[in-house]
Length: 188
Image (cartoon, rainbow, N blue to C red; front, side, top):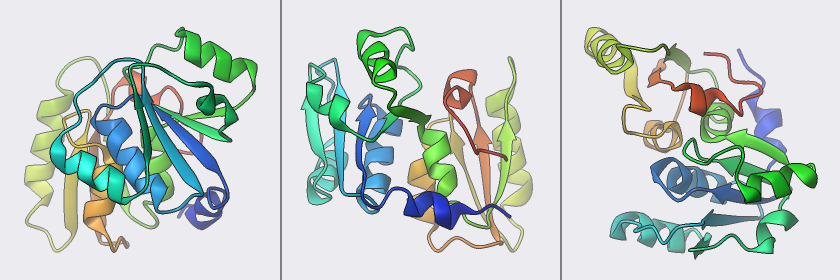
């Protein structure tokens, strides 16, 4: 059993920046917006955010900046970095220079997993197949079973879809090395 309530409490008065407006960044922003003071979703590229996701982000009062990273990021108390963002990028170097804590979407989602069981699947080859096969084996059990991660559905979105989460909830996650890079407490 993890002590996730204390980790979630850490977020309450924080302003959080999420770097990378791909699916993991979008859903991390939505999840975090419900538990912290404010969220900034930033991407250096002019990425297209789907209409459904954009509507949810706006309804959750997530500030969005595309095409640049402003200095607002450097005023955050925590930064969540999407797996596609290079650890050598200029913005990450600035964040590290300011000693702002950097975590991954997987780490943050884990904080909300409460008593759920988590199966993490990593490796060089066969992750997607193994993840999906594991899901197929467990989906007809009495448990609430979800699969995602690197296979297409971000862990943070699964957390929102699985609510309420308890000991009968099972998350099967395909995890890349990039997703695990900025984890601290994550223990599947």
